[in-house]
Structures are given as structure tokens and as C-alpha cells.
Length: 279
Image 1 (tube, rainbow, N blue to C red):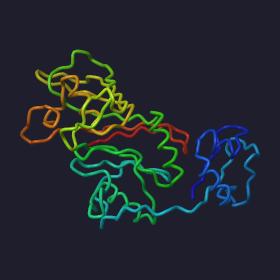
Image 2: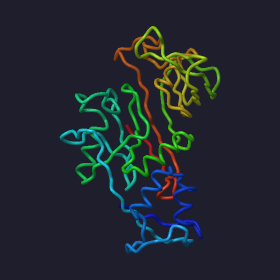
Image 3: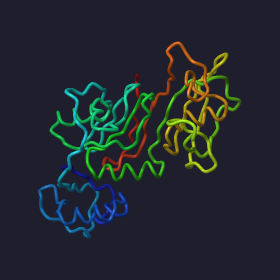
Image 4: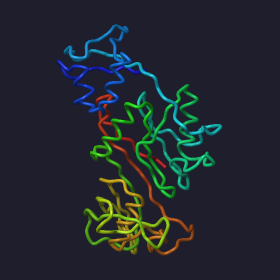
């Protein structure tokens, strides 16, 4: 259950669901059949009645149970949370979600422990981070939020910023890499730039330069597997330590890619959310 405050004069419930949130027909139908939307006092509300700014309506609907097995305790940091979503800082070396029933210590297993502590049953990640990438992951706390955030990811209105130190110095201080990405036929997990691959766009900006490397901030328009790693390697500047993509091996034997910031217009709170990872 949650409350929503109308922020546009003469907005109807129908307009809110279909035109503002652009929920799918199935979800809208289910909400109508469940009589899920009422006044704050629980009185029925007509979906086509114009509402005034400041009117508060109440959503009450069944929340399904997600399938992630909760860990005994949540051992990851929750850096932002409200009634609709949370943002966690995924540690390096941890998968975003399980790949099979035996995989019970992923980020989403820890998230589910946190949700369970609050008496909740639902959590679904909106995007994912590679196992070797640390940083911010957005998680929806109910199906309406999941549907809206999924659309926002598709429409590139959730801005995801990453940081990486790369080999060499990029000639340009900023730019865009727009190259399709596909599977490498000669390697089970590696990806390659391919004309027939999935559309992929990465924007970059150099924020620090050193003798033989530079630090770049990157913003994803798309979210392909290994996208940043593939694109940086393609332009001749792989992430330091990313041996899968042609970088020299480091003492740690690993690469450093960090999801440092998430920014979006919150569809339920009607304000801009900017969350930075402090790790």
C-alpha cells in the first residue's frame, strides 16, 4: 500500500495510470478489477473524475512474492530507500541475481533479506551489474514501480554513471562510442563489437589524466553485457587489469569498474533523485 499526491490540476486516475505512468493494459485492468485506488479514507474514487493538486489517493493491491532466497542477514549497504524502490551498493565479485537454485548469496538474496526484515515479500532489480563491477543497483519494491522503472530504463531516463581507469590517454576529453555488441563465437562469456550485434551507446568524459592512464566517467544509454569493457577496449583503451579485453594484468589480477551515480525523476514522489556511491 502507498499514497500518491496529485501534482497536476484536473488530473484523473485514468490519465495518471495510462498517460503519465504509461502502465500496461494488463496492470491497469488488474488495478481496476481490484478496486485498488481509493481516497485516503478508503472511499471509492471515479477514475475519470478530475482531481486537484494536493489530493492524496491510496493504492492498495496484492504484492506477489519474489523468488529470491533471503540470506540470514543483509550484508550489503542500502544507500537509498522509499516506499517504491531502494538502491544498494553491490560489492565487487558478487552477482546481481542467482543463475540457479544453488546460487543464494547474490546481491538480490541480500536485498530480499532486507525486504523480509521490513515485512515485505517483493524485490526485483531494474538493471544489472556485472559480477566484477561494484556500485549502485536500483531495485523495485512493488510491481507498479518495476513496470515504470523498466520503461524508464528503455527510454534512457535513468542516468547511470560509471567510473573506470583505463590504459593510455584518450585523445578526446569527451565523446560517444556507438558500436553494436554481440557474442564472441570463440569464447563462452566474452563479447565483441559486431555490425550485427545489439545496438549499444556509451558516452565518456575524461576526468583525470596520468602519465600512462586516465580516469573516465561513463554514461550508458543501453545496458548490454560487458558494454563499457567492450567499448573501451574497442577504442584501444581497455580498463586497467581487464585481461579478458586485452589489458595488462595488475597485481590484484582484476579490473576496477564502479557504478558511481544514479539519477532519475521519481515517478511516485515527483522529484529528482540523485544517489552517489561513497565507496
